[in-house]
Amino acid sequence: MKSSKIVGVIAQCTAVVLLTTALHTQAQNKPDKLWTATRMSTTTNFDVPECLLFDSARKGVFVSNISAKEDEYWSDNGKGFISLIDPDGTMKNLRWLDGNVENPLHSPKGMCVVKNWLYFTDNTRLLRCKIGKNSEVASAPEVVALPGTKKLNDLATDGKSVLVSDTELGKVFRIDPSGKVLEIPSPENVNGVTFHRGKIFAVSWGLHEVYELDPAGKNPPKPFGLASHFKNLDGIEVLDDGTFLVSDFMGNKVSTISPDRKTVRTLIEIESPADIGLDRKRGILYVPQFMKNQIVLFRLKKG
Image 1 (cartoon, rainbow, N blue to C red):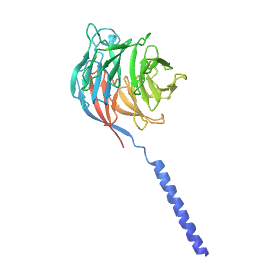
Image 2: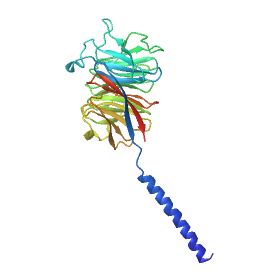
Image 3: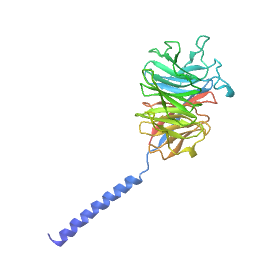
Image 4: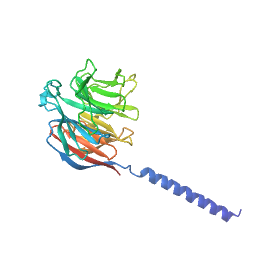
């Protein structure tokens, strides 16, 4: 081959290498797409709303109302109730589930749905009631056996087992379909809990930290190392891309945590956000404003 052709080939190869390197560098420097939240609507007239739960099967949203003064959030006062709203925030039934003398309802907080059953915490009790096909109450609340509890708080499910946190004891219990209970090592003041693709995550109110818990109940909780970013964490959800959403009650914000658990961003600045809910399919975040007796809907978008 003539030297001129060799030089030409080398030049072409060099150009290809430079172009590939430039494209790779550009891809590395391209900023990650970030989640944003746009306020959609506000619904008022609740009474200390603590938790919001989207029921994908029946397309409704449950709202637990503690209905108590600040020093009575864990009292057996018989005043609590659960509301039902439409996915767009329209009030459907303020007192969808109310207590009575035979079946008192005190301070309902965390909720989850397993098949046709709505599970909810009520101070020392774990309760459940059946939901009808049109989201009507189909049975009176019944107690799910879980002895020795103090302050039951949040609930989560993977569709089979139920997770329940006890904030005073600093424990999370996993209840399987047969009723067998497994205690999962958890941080003190554990509050919000959630399942995500076989893993369990939780937040601590007092330690203001996020943790991964061992589903088998053998290993201690693993902290994310992000406590300096928060004040008092309440709720937690995980988006399909692995991004974490956490509500910081005293920090007055909802934040995102990157899937690699390293980057924290403020998604929403909002007063007293409690236990958040999520409609994954439509990308709607439901935020209860505990101290303002209202809930706010946000549209989530990435990009």
